[in-house]
Image (cartoon, rainbow, N blue to C red; front, side, top):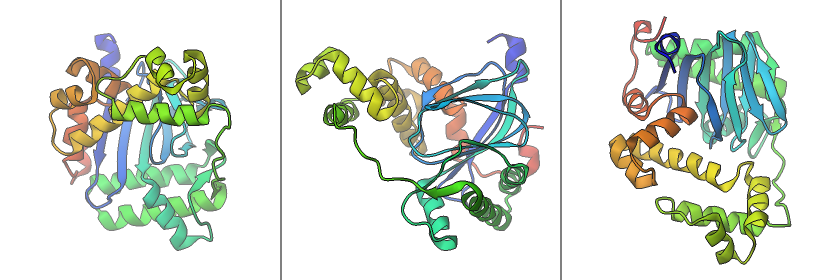
Length: 287
């Protein structure tokens, strides 16, 4: 990225201590591209300026001002600017427990809830998302919590439902699951695709196809995403970025920095500082 391009971009990722189970990101991205990844929880993003192109299993969604992007847990996706000037948005990352607890308290939906549409034009929901950010930045826990519940109730009522039970693909599903377990256990020193296939009694191409069909990503992409997830947990516990990089299998801290930023949206150091801090005034956020 050029110096001029870098000046155009800003991002702030943090966690408000009074709302456990919720991460917040406000950013403007111009040249930044999110590589394919997924989240354990949900994504609610309100675009306020520009256009974001979100790559999802069903195709690319172009989201402009007034649009709210909703992504269910474990759905692989990418994101990049859809116009030269990039996009500005406020995003919430609530955990599955947060959303399902609100659903159980306010609706008849049970089990894991989700959203059939990935992108909806819903300016009211967008204003609630930016309002949650503003309240959290000001340290107004009552307002932030209230607005979050109103947002989730409204989105569930207009766009939500119970997610269907996942039916495993019969062919290769067992091998894909075993391969994923092996990669989780040996994250710091993973086997090659060929070695993994030999262990499972299948061929490399068969395993590659089965894994991608089951998890929406090839094994190497999934492993990078899993490493970043585990690095986040270590950073949350106070582990230094360099130590986290070594623990999850990245060659060095620059490799962690690059992959972490492409998936989370901010470097590991900025993420760690934001998670350890509660904003008290609106002046702490970008203009």
